[in-house]
Image (cartoon, rainbow, N blue to C red; front, top):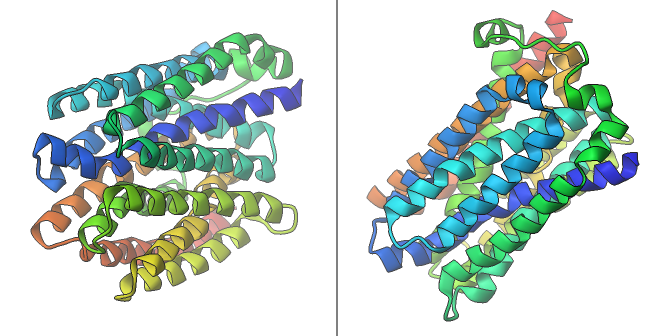
Length: 388
């Protein structure tokens, strides 16, 4: 039964990943059809991120009241409705409208399942969980690349994604009783859990610096996802369908990095895996900075996914260890909110810079976040060691 529940959680995380890579892949076709400036993608991504920040901040209270199982099922259904809305949208304001439920649903799923796995399962399972997220975000660009050049266009990609998401939501609804049988106390919120205020959380040693790490890794991840395709189209002069296929390899790299991280977790601790990932990420950014062919740039994006991919799940897994299981849900919500601030601001600013300069700024922009991440990593390990 425990294994079955874990499989259901993995599938739910595929559903979390499906919407995340669709918009960035489809945007070159969307802004052309709607006759919009490139940077207007930020309106949609910022609204999605605002929704995830709000749901993450209130997640601890909601999850402790209704349970991880019900929150996950409802939130997945909410994202399915949002994807259907995207597929019928004929204007920017409609995209922005349906971005609201997409963000609210994604933030709740992310926070709930990350803490649940961090508390009840091993580091290997946490990395595999995010590997399944990588599968979700890898499948989406592939689906979009198959249909974007056809009669249905980018809307067809969203319609297929809606059907997949709907099936996952139904699976979560049908398997609600399993959660109670495997971990009844945690699902029902009966276990001793402290719900802290934001002021109490940020005053805990190490929380603020960990939040900075969540900010930087997600800033890199989502800037690549949102603008990688546009970088290849506008700066490397690839066609939209070719760029979509190239960006798919970025997400494959992310999934592979998380899979390998899960295997390495049997021999290495989370901080060691994080260090390896950061080395790979640094080398990948150097490839993107060099004026080489689109194939090399695609390889650079693949390596960005490979190196950056393991960081987020390992940061999540460390939460109960760093701060204790009794407050991990509250801390997790704050960390997720910080991650989504990065998701909201970083791609938006990159879009503005890309419009007013050009997309050659893309790899330089990523490098700034990487350097900030390296400095913060050294600081956070010192703070946590001192606190212990």
